[in-house]
Length: 99
Image 1 (cartoon, rainbow, N blue to C red):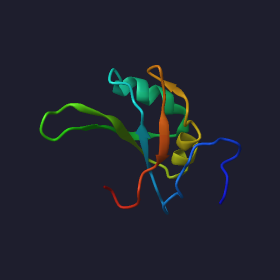
Image 2 (cartoon, rainbow, N blue to C red):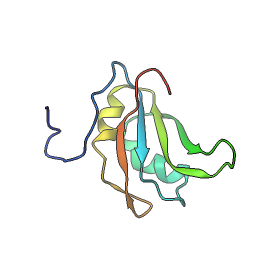
Image 3 (tube, helix red, strand yellow):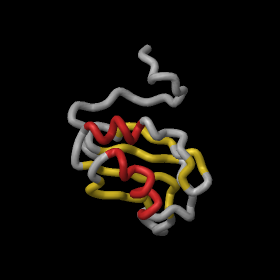
Image 4 (cartoon, helix red, strand yellow):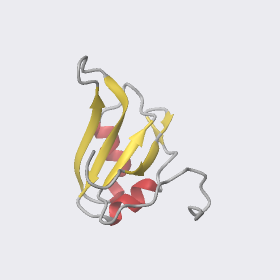
């Protein structure tokens, strides 16, 4: 198994041409500007999406960030464990082909 330069986060293999990362363990107080601020240096953010329950509209504690460049996801995943809204954010490549 290949290790990620010294961090112990389990990151899945990057799908070819991946431009979206998954972020988990989000605070329920999270907002888009906070997410954009954390990932701003990674590359051009094209979209931030927060997962909501289809029926209640309640936030489900995770979301996705979409970038213009595939390389930006590498930088974003490297930020796993960063403090975002008082919690250690989980970051991973989002699965290939939407979802």
